[in-house]
Length: 401
Image 1 (cartoon, rainbow, N blue to C red):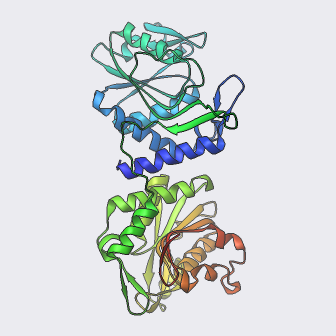
Image 2 (cartoon, helix red, strand yellow):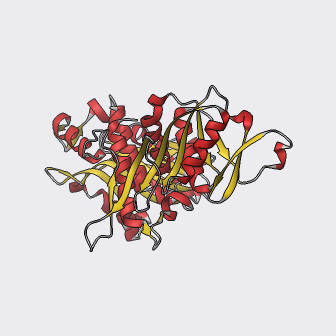
Image 3 (cartoon, rainbow, N blue to C red):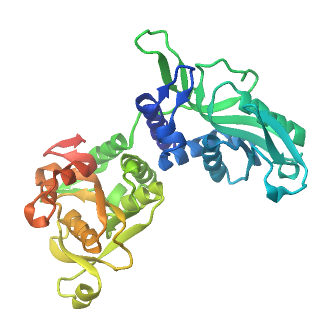
């Protein structure tokens, strides 16, 4: 995971805590709307990837977590990126264990159990939780490691809640954000990224993309922007991954089930977004206007390539889009809007819902957004203008949007 993507993830986590977390009277931090009960899957996976990166030097062989729903998700996300098993401490002995030998420790006044043969003396164990408050859960899980004879090598948590007195002295703990008492009466708590050991640049994907367009993009006659060296001929995969992560975060709460794009320029950003959202990618292919077999057997819509200066038809198979799909349209450029309108029509023919449209570069002077709202395109609602997102926009001169 690149350092830029880690920066995006930690900035996003810090912003979500600042805007959505609630501090209860007893000092407990409530993050139910994005980390516990209603989970942002992209954010959770990013947090797991960063914790895995920070703890990989410990050479762990197993992840140990408590059985509460809060701790399970970051433990699973971290273990996936480390490619090691997870062991859960259960609040009761499952019937399936029968008479097999167990080891136990008390967490929140309840005994929690682990099969004795689930952790061996050869294992190097890390403990993962969502929020470390008093440290009592970590102490209990460490006790299970000791009973198994395993080596306890570290602790990882998404948030360190320092509003409560804790017993974490002597532990080396990796966290992504910390909440501390504030000295200001107007602001009861201080929320900050816990990244002292990681030199994260203060950048976002749009900044990097803007710099590349300004330095490597070439404006050709006819308002063509040549970005062959990093977007659509030779692809900068690191930059594309960053853009995909950022656009995925923008649309993470929209319930996206599929990403829809058109060949060929739209494939790199669409693949990056679909990968970040963990959803399938559907690519509309091109054919000529008189291809009757496509018209009769596929979902199809007329389009026009601004770059190639020709009319064409975009099509997808009827199996690739369904009436219950929620779709995100992604492309490299938004110019006249004809490709975006055609992709929307394909989804509309299938009965799918278009939740939004995302582009790397927008040529504002060609008013592609206006095409989404034109009556002849059956996209009457202002929501389509609002739901279109681009990372870089032009208004005759270059501007970041």
